[in-house]
Image (cartoon, rainbow, N blue to C red; front, side, top):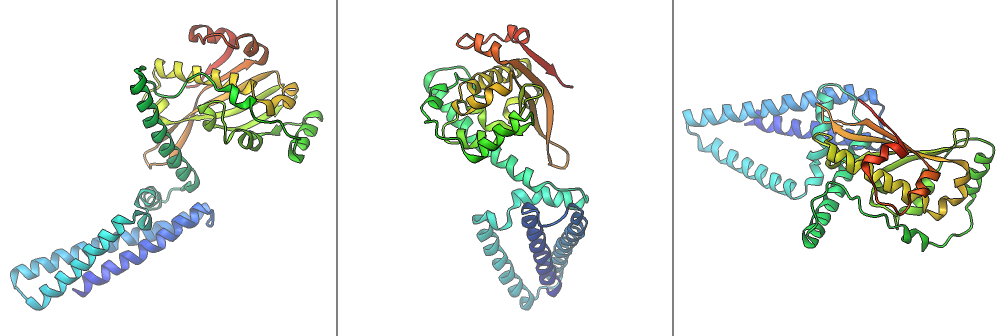
Length: 322
């Protein structure tokens, strides 16, 4: 009996320490090399759980062979307490945080580096995409439209026109000064602050790392698409929808009023398209599968015209990656 209780307590203490490690990893409180110490604690937790199971089986066999009420009653009380604790923990899943702890423990057991922040962001994005997909499905069913994987509806450029153009902030002035000196600038924060409340297109949420390079006259950015748009296989139909979405994002960006002061420093827009995939250790990886670059003047000429996927390769430079 004592061995069983001791093993349960030890396993709980080791798991609590690992839970603290996981939280600290998210706050970047530990260096990546600390995964080796976490690995030792993970192995100790596993061994303690095995000892608890072994002790419980041995205790059960002992009770079967020689019934002892003095041992049975305390065991029932302990199991009842464990059952109540398990019920309370299942109602408050955030305490154990099993969904996040499993990939962390898997990385620790194999002494592999763990990217906590990327894991958290990926799961938040997946939850957001699931909610949006359900909403889109409900609207599609109600309107009788065919099924779509990602939203490629017409850009809502009119919303951006309703945003009053205030005075340039000191940060924007600094960025413009740098561009005039021929230096490249990152306008990601400017993009987020101007599109957070009223994005001109749904796919704006997948945009990151927007940069203007006046020497090359290019505004470039990344687009990390959700797994629903590219997995399990990037079929021609999915690829066509991605291209259509990118084209609409290009057109939507050209209507952004806050971007007008920067338009003189770039003559083309380029995006690198990534797909997300989990590896065998349940870690998220971003894989580049396509790059698209299009001239600003060409975008203006095609504004208002229907998107033709067959002609897209003639008006834009599309590079497919292996």
